[in-house]
Length: 97
Image 1 (cartoon, one colour):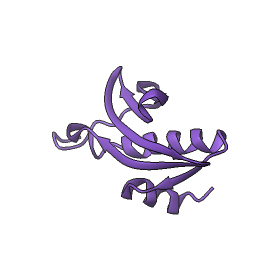
Image 2 (cartoon, helix red, strand yellow; image 1 turned 120 degrees about the vertical axis):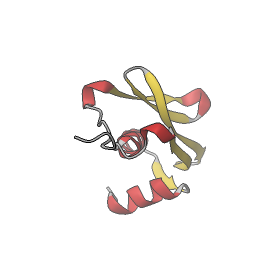
Image 3 (cartoon, helix red, strand yellow; image 1 turned 90 degrees about the horizontal axis):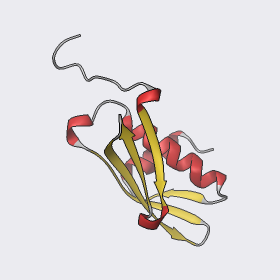
């Protein structure tokens, strides 16, 4: 490993939380919030408007983990996820079900 290789988190280090009062999902790494995926409800849709990972933590697979959990959650709630944010839109194209 070199100094430029990103340290990748293990699943036990990560937690994705739904914060419905803020219409967001957050991802924590060792208890620190390192990213979020914001959404708004529109009928039976959850429209993801913005996804962000702290710049020092990018390139470690955190955005995919966050979005995977968020999309799985809204689907289980009977909602259709919609990607207004480019990252979620790309994720949904790659994972249509």
